[in-house]
Length: 471
Ligand code: SAH
Ligand code: SF4
Ligand code: F3S
Image (cartoon, rainbow, N blue to C red; front, top):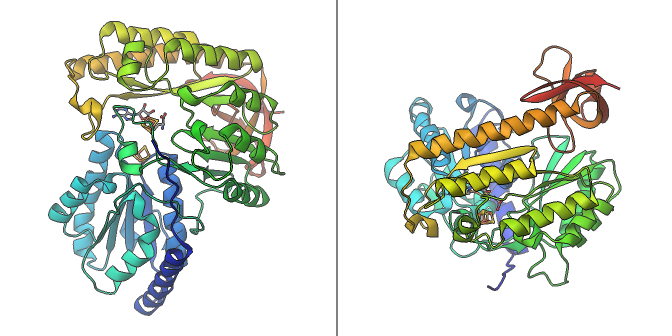
């Protein structure tokens, strides 16, 4: 499959900058105070990262921000299409805006993200939600200034769903959500077409950013004092396809690792079929990369993996894990699991249980299979009733919590490094942070610890967090 790498041209970006300027003039004439925008991202980190660009463009147009949709002049929902319940939640939220719009007819409502890149969804909004002003798909993110300007200046409702594979738009303004951890997209889209998954259909083909753009952003983040950078892509292990100079993900990681600064590196998501020994060696030799790999396995059955088009076997997967543990005895893993893929049998599900007992993940993200129309799996026979799948899910969760409990107990008495990232939930004076494997750790300490790497001696464990004292 050819990998394309089309970019949004400088001329197009300048044209949008121009629309942003015109929008900002219009906004300052229309509103006495800077208007407020409420932007909510429903999906994965890639989606959150798009949300930060949306906020960057809105800030450029003169918007401030609020956490309350009721006090906003503009509400934007950045949607996710990965499972049906994600979509239902969005429709629920959009429905709830109707009375708000009735009360404040000036309120602008925009919907964007993966759900909106589907024509059927955009049509549904057009026909059944007449109070929505803007609808734009993932491929139209950079067009926000134009769409908003047109609508604000009285044109009809704006719908934009560019066809094709999506392009790379460099240089969009970004307004990041935090000051400690930053997402850094290194690639967009996906070429894998796992049979259950809608992502390649709504995000387009895989395209990698140039290393120089990624490194410049990493340097900038380090200079701003960010303590953790997460390199993002649907399959980071295939980074580099279609770039003018040959480079793979390990090479890129080495370059980001060499960026000066007091920060650590995460990356997601690693597809096991493209996870190489070179990558594991690179992590082992690095200074800044956490010894933790999110390596979604999805299922412990070779037949199900083949039906999912995952292109690895359980044996391949376990060999990788074994190699990583050989090279880094302290390495930990997390994973995604789908329960109840069409045609999955009880025996096949038990193979998944067997696998998770064997690997002992520190975290599992578990999902009941959700039929996505347009995907291959949507055509497959799916005889297992929903209640049965829910029972399997509970079994999976129980199995994992027993594993987790043992791991948590093993922490007691140990001193671990934690990146403090905010106030804790345990009560007054508690600080919260994360260790290398992204477990929540709470400890008593001063607010000034937030944003630093600290050592914490673990004394107690509950299922949601570890607790300890500052060393
Ligand atoms: N690119 C990443 C994951 C993207 S989606 C990867 O390949 O790992 C995140 C997770 O959602 C997937 O790993 C999968 O476990 C789950 N998922 C995707 N489509 C799904 C569907 N139709 N039903 C249930 N879970 C799904
Ligand atoms: Fe979906 Fe598979 Fe691509 Fe991940 S690798 S986004 S699961 S198609
Ligand atoms: Fe992410 Fe959901 Fe889109 S998981 S890529 S926001 S479909």
